[in-house]
Length: 282
Ligand code: HEM
Image 1 (cartoon, rainbow, N blue to C red):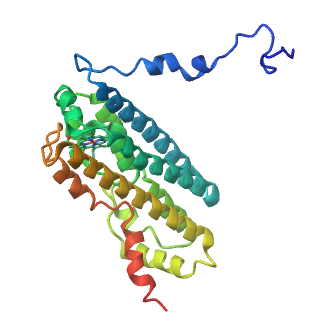
Image 2: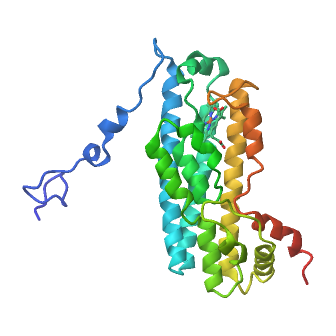
Image 3: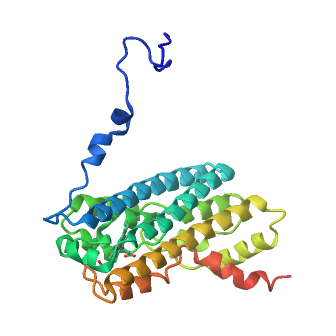
């Protein structure tokens, strides 16, 4: 290998040089922001970029969720915990990004809002895949993709796959915990149904956290994931109210009022319920 002055010592002579732009497809990436307003509204660019950035992070969270599940399936808990930590770090970025969107004034948004109609966040299929992967399996959202058969096929596939929670409960069962009673009765495409026995198992792990530190850490990481998800929903709902008050959404829902109903969703209900019993156990 020849060392070039001021050049890259890792480039073999005669080999086509890979550049930053080529590797990352920067030109393609920067050509993907197509504003619809005419004349162009300044803030529409921000609106498009922020959604695209979210979708990229959703992609990375899904990528990491699959890694986490395959590590759990292979019975390696601590590397799976590292994936959970990465997901948590990304979720914090997702929440913080709302600050950027909130620099837009309601009237600046309204100047281009009509151009988006009827497109809506409801149609973010990656968000729905993420919900399904985290156990929130609800077919009622399929209707938002009726013009996209390929997306419906993808959602149909994912809704039948085991969720992250399923993988964790199966991992615990292989370690000797009785976590599969309800899970084994449930059809794969149904939402998780609450299991009191799992709550008691979690409470016992919390109680015994010094002896079961790795399991305890994983339970806390799952709780973080659930909490960050709710915090994103909450920040998004407030941001929506800040932009459009109590108006309906472009997807036809009651807007902020609909979003408020989603704050009730819990990914891992037994983790929250376990808190009720921890202090009462001897
Ligand atoms: C000015 C900015 C925004 C406004 C006014 C807004 C408004 C809304 C409204 C009203 C809904 C309810 C569905 C409907 O009727 O359309 C919704 C849902 C949604 N939005 Fe946004 N949104 C904004 C930015 C974002 C951003 C940046 C993302 C990031 C991807 C996002 C993702 C979603 C998702 C995933 C849903 C579905 C939530 C669920 O069903 O639980 N939104 N949005």
